Each structure stands twice: as structure tokens, then as C-alpha cells.
Image (tube, rainbow, N blue to C red):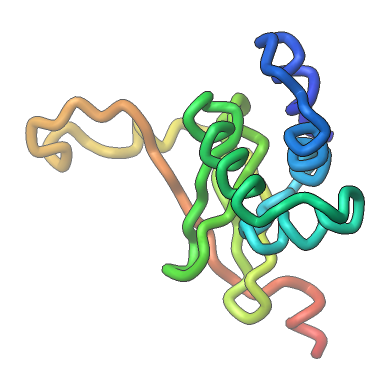
Length: 138
């Protein structure tokens, strides 16, 4: 499980019923939901929660650095609560399933100085693509 709720409590972030539900929906490993998916799951727990509240809460969580915005397919943004542990993503090219992966090595070190074009590189995002076991057998 991610520690999103604990991190938010530690920051003193005011956990209204709506904010708590959004955080609970996002909490966990390999969670990469779209805003619409977050809203649909939040409504199951708190029927009166509005789409605008979900979008606003997601925006606040991203601004706080507690949730990452992930775009792996040039479509809807997805929200990843695994914001404080370095990782990359493994994406199924057929169904779009996303898993967090932590390969060994340092991808930043793999970029030679001659390929940095004078940039001071501070972050690396890697997306591995393939076919998940479920799609491979279908």
C-alpha cells in the first residue's frame, strides 16, 4: 500500500470527507487511475461528491507533490500516489494496465555527457511497453 493518507496527515492537510475519499481511492500499490475513475470510485463511497471536487482535490495533491500526474498513452492523465519512491512504469500495449517497476541501475547515469547537449538533467521518466500476461493469453 502507498502511504498517501499518512503523508497527508503528516503535512496537516485538512482531510474533509471528500478529500479523504479521494485519497482513499488513490491509496495502494500500482494505482494509476484517471480522474473519471477516481470520481466513479469516490461516488461509491460518498455519493454526493462532485466531479469538480475530485478534479480540484487531484490538482491540489499534484501541487503538493503527493500524487504524480502520469501520461503513458497520450490520452487521459492518470494519478499515481507513489510520488516519493523513485520508479518507472510498465504499460500493457493492449489493455493499458500499468505497473510500477524499480529496475536496478541509474538511468540518469546511462545518458552519456555527449548526449546531454549541455542540459543539467534532474529527472528521468522511463516507460516500458509490452503485453501483460492476461492479454498474452487472450
